[in-house]
Length: 212
Image 1 (cartoon, one colour):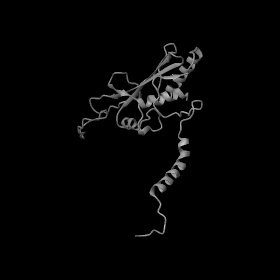
Image 2: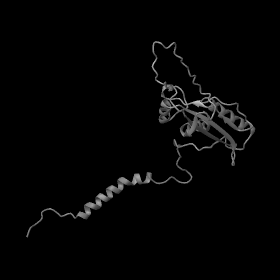
Image 3: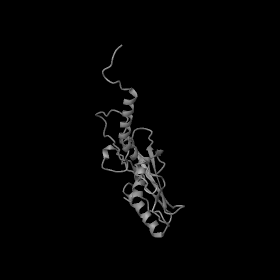
Image 4: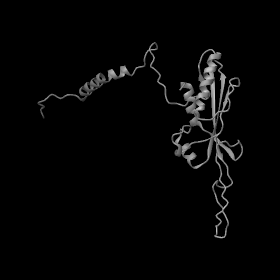
C-alpha cells in the first residue's frame, strides 16, 4: 500500500477559490454596467444621421418675426449655391434658376458634395434646380422642404462633333461656327430629369437647421 507524504487537495476547493477571485474582479465592472437611475438619465449624443425633409426650424408659436427670419435664412443659404428667381415671402416658396453642376475641374465651387455626383458632372452636362417651401408646422415652428432636381443634357450628337470632311487647297474658306455655352437654357429643351440630388439636399437642410 502506497503512502502519501503530502495532503491531497480536492479539485473542487481550487475551483471555488478561482470562482471567488473572478467574482471579486468582475464586481466593479458589473456595477458600472448598470443602467442610470431615472432621475439621472444618460445623455443622448447627436449622430450624423440624415436630416428630416422637411426640417423643423424655429420651434414654438409661429410669429411674423420668426417666419421672416426663417425665410431670409433660407434665401441666403440657397443664394450661395444658385441664382434665385425673385422670392416671394407671401408665397413661401424659393425657386432657383438652373445651373450647371460643378465637377472635379471646378473643385472650388460648392453644391456637389458627393464624390460620385461630382465625378459624373465632370464627364456629363448635368444641371441642378432647387426649390424650397416654408410652411407652418402643426405643432408650432416652421417646416422647410427642400428639393434639388438633377437634369441631364440630351443631345442627338456630341456638342463639338465635326463631320470630318477634308479641307483641300482649292477650298476658299472654312466656315467655323462657334457655340456659346451658357447655363441659361429654357427648361425642357434638351434636358431630362435623372432624379434628385439627395446629398445636396441634406447639406442645405443641415445648414438651415443649424442656421449656418
